[in-house]
View 1 (spheres, chains in turn cyan, brown, blue, purple):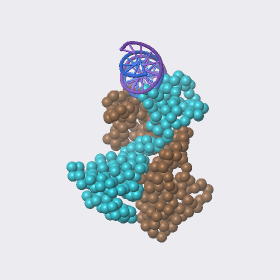
View 2: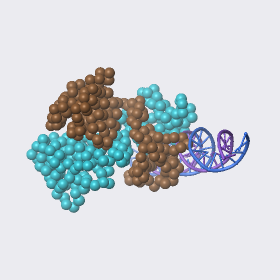
View 3: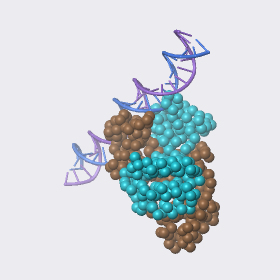
View 4: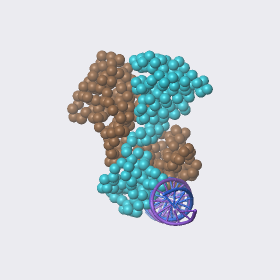
Length: 208
Length: 208
DNA sequence: ATAGTCGAGTGGTCTGACCACCATATCTAA
DNA sequence: TTAGATATGGTGGTCAGACCACTCGACTAT
């Protein structure tokens, strides 16, 4: 391998730097195509597997996008994947689990408030349909109910983080509110009573 | 390869999930040793190169630490490397900024409220010290200020997620509130005025 | 012209081979 | 007996080469 190596740098880290340099030199922009793996391998005098290790890491960081049979492309940086991956590992840590439920509830409350201005009669009916559908257990109703609300927040990051927590909380317990909570919330939407949302969540808070 | 593959998931992504599961099942903690690459390869029925792609990506994210000749170890998540790598690559894309900032602000607001009941005079003075310390720029003050508040929430998960976003938002801009915001918040703590916290954040909201 | 085929290029994956490094067990010499 | 040298096995680091699956465009037969 010939990639710059000052102390004991691993090849894939050197490749990473070289790619960065390459992007800079060629002034590549979002959407542009990077050289193929084989080409990079040859140009940098590194094994293809090492090149791939660098590319895979970049991919996980959301820096590049890979299209099978086509090539590797620079992508607009989106923090989502990264945050998602990291969050999934953070959640794994037992010491952080205690706060899971209360954090999840915070997100649910804020989502309910964010969605407030974007919810109309039709949406409310949709929500009511969910909580009236007795073919599902309440756990699933909870999930659908809030999925719908989060969708209305139009904040993808917020939604993804909530979804992760929802997933993990299922390995625990108490993953929903009392039955009438949901009805109360839709009532507030109906009455356009923004203020009371905060109070509703406080009343039904599940402590941990 | 046998790692769970629903749609068209790449092997290394499946390996990533499996490793996460493994950490969970065995309740591995920071500093614990992961199975060797060869062992993982065999257990997950994936090539060693695929396993390595997953591990290298995790390494770049700072989730694991690799010691030549010894093995792979779970590491406390340290954002440094991640941020460093990203910073050297980031093409600032305004369109992705929105979700991150608003979500971060939600967490800050809720933390401020959660900490409310656990903040005493001494803590307030500590906060004031931070915002009066002009040897730091306001960005750093913001960081310390809220670090302190999040600590008081005693919710590790919430804190970690916020920290994550804080790190990422630094690759962008606008990572703090107007100067007097912080003073106002400590005043509310002083006056034991819980209600106004919500309003304060609303007034100082950084739109996106 | 159009539809179908084929091949070159690309990423995706696996295997097997070495090397470098580390810890530990083992042997050797004092 | 014991301190130091050495052998060994396990681990990560890296490479080369082989296939496979997919995409796209050029070529061909209709």
